[in-house]
Length: 592
Image (tube, rainbow, N blue to C red):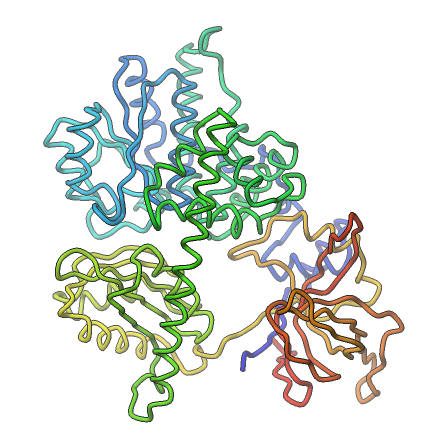
């Protein structure tokens, strides 16, 4: 049973925000998310961190400006996820506007694996013959790949945001906020954000050189923020102040119909209104369709969709991506059913170690390598354990994809496994919440044991209880369309969660809709004084509980979000229930 806690906030910060004119409910929400003053809520581009704070960025901009002037051939080497695809699209689109000769190459995950490997460098040299390689969303760990490029006479510029290893690659220049000595304060910026910042620096360098003419006019780089917003949200990086500015500005462009043909086409095939788009659509509607190309096929299709200005071609690409995403969902459903059966069987076996395990590692030779990350996420959500799912890789190898819970840094955990058992992992990379690795198939059982030992060292039993954080109760006066509409237009996501609330409700009526959802009429119960009987509100509210068709008891404790329900052209307020429990068994910590 999850534990529900109410987010704490600093009383002084609450007062400060209230004095700035924020209503108490918003002051409370923002204070609980670390906002200390109204300036941190500003989303104008003028509030972005200056590009000059990136280590090596002026050097890299000068190298690119020299390459453009010398008409050198540039090649972007991308990653095969949404962040890599959008980063590649930003680089391609802007560099071409700046007069560069630039192409791209994205590794097929099944043939080449992740990053700038020596094999990818050799392929680039043989097929594209570039003078200069630019990595986006990868490269910080590509020591061997950069060495191979240097041997073949190609310069390498690394743009990345992942954590570096003990040794940096011998690239001509590296920009990465997480490399040693980089003062850029937003360590959470996505790969697409890093290349966008490089383009800001390059434009400034070219402006200083007097490179802009009537033939090559100075571009408005804000017109590419739709791509930056998509990649940032889809990569699930923490939405700090700087990232929220990038995302909000991108959303505003999309809502005004000023996005690229590819994003517009993806919204159309998903039947979403561009004027109503939020971070939800970026992360859960567009991101998965884009990612489907890299998971099942080749991310070139996604990059083509995002780089074309031809609306017909963009629509064709979007339709193919939509079909790939359907296939991905079917594969995922089969894998999920198989995985949950394995786990349920193990849980019923009294001899199984999974009963007391702090981690979960699973392998099946039939599982699809491109979908194991999603499966790991689903299992992590259900069992609240660090999870690594393996599929067959190259000969005698397994590819693993992991997802983690709060308090367990997955990449650091894998690093501990390597230090304790150097023979078990061939290669790995990632960050706190997600990571990938390759092991020899014969070492699977040993790896599982070693990973479990690390998990038991770093986690406590309390860590294995899922915690649902809420923003507490809402006064009846705060439950209105105005607040719902305001919250719907803001930027929420990783590290800056969408507000949820908890309360006790009387279930006035309930009926099944769409065969698998509960449509509810709810009356909120309030107790203004300790020991007083709970009083029903005189107003009843619409509610919805998705993917649940069993009847609820008359009284429930629920975690909910305010939602605007659009139906038959009419907008109404409803409560979207995210979690509920019987009032006989409340698990709410009001003292958090």
